[in-house]
Length: 367
Image 1 (cartoon, helix red, strand yellow):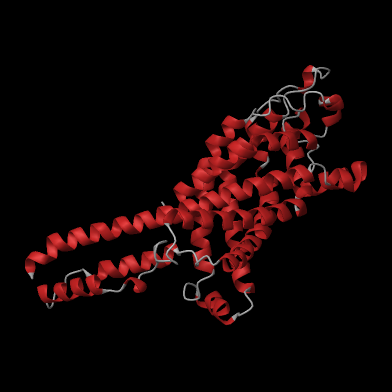
Image 2 (tube, rainbow, N blue to C red):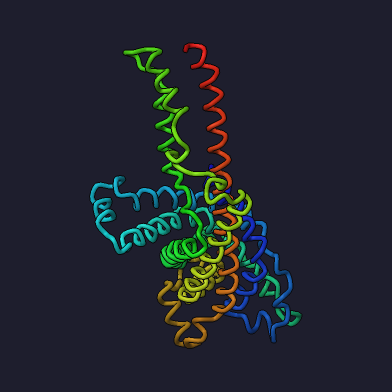
């Protein structure tokens, strides 16, 4: 839950903050932009169209993304989790193995989340371009929504998101680590480490069938006498004496700034892929596309854009995409990390409270 809830809430915060910019970007990237929005007329109308489908799909897709990413990252960046790869991680002092683990984790997470997000993304983009200027024709209204055409954009969406996240998340982890050291932010508590410590605490309190209550008393005393520094994580108050609110704000700011920089760089590099994805999703409702004829592959569409519109055409919408991605990634990962820290610390405190209560009620009478 410490990844699902913060991830879903962070996704909702992003959708609310950057959706109008995303709408303008989609309209600018449309192949018939000039005729649909002559002289820019109608470009800024109905900027929230398509918001509903995205909210419905983004919450579960974001939760699925972060759950997959955190589990895969723990698996691929912990030396003792995988026999062969773990030895490489432990022996590599340059950090390349860890960066590759972050990239692979984000790729797996994207493949999972795109399966949930694709239908909503297609519907959203068609609704975004449905509003035209005063001189636009009726042909520029909402395209049809055939089931096959909605799902056609999966590989286009994954083809854009995989390189984007494979570039963004290693950059994000590197930026965040460097910035955290600069501002003196302690390393983020690893969920896997806390899980192992909690498991060890539960194991200590299990009865020993061979020695009976004496073993239970020894286990109880060991848990009660364990110093705070031996736990898997320290509370914000223990980390330099700063308040919990200040710590969560600092963690969110570090993650947000790091994500904004990594997101802007990744968005600029992958703008051509985003343009192709938008064209495929908007074109897939045409009669020729829906009948399975004359469909162009992503590479073929990219070649056509280069031939007819040049390099400038391939980078259409790049500045807008960099702006809203930097803002969105900053809010997304900043609020996610701050929320995850708060949620994890709250869960740890609740666990300690329950542990003390159970120990006092069950073990003390037997002493």
